[in-house]
Length: 200
Image 1 (cartoon, rainbow, N blue to C red):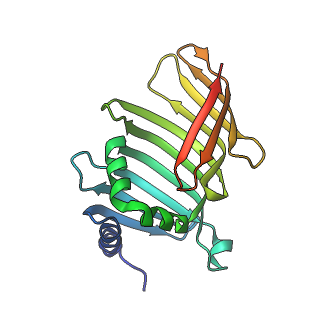
Image 2: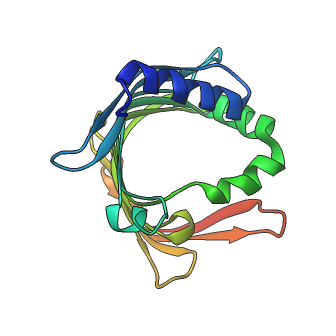
């Protein structure tokens, strides 16, 4: 009854392709029970001119919540990924508002750690990021640390949520200087989010 890696990869890529309305390829999926239950997806890639890709994505479910029939991911670990902003924007527009509403069914994540994530801006500028995020419900970061390991002087950003408000204390080191202050997130009735900030 334990699925083989290739069977899991074929099933998962089929489900993802159906959900997103495009081909999604996955090289393999690995399962582990010890030392802690986990699922690892290797070489995930979307079918785009500039594909979204993940080298290795590992999820660790919260067993206590799983026994209560609730899927909560205790940890998510990403090692190597490329996320083009234009592809992400096109995918978001293609999914439409119905899918955005369904996004509320996405499992809660308690903690995420990522290494070697390449974000490609709308003007094709690639930025490599490392970081860790602790989440509150509704995907609100409780505490986050992000850095650019390949830059000199180093870039680091730390966010700390203020109580349960959509407002974060921000500490940034960039270009040999600092930019400290606050960020605030406002959500309109149609679900559109607006991020603003005051930095010194």
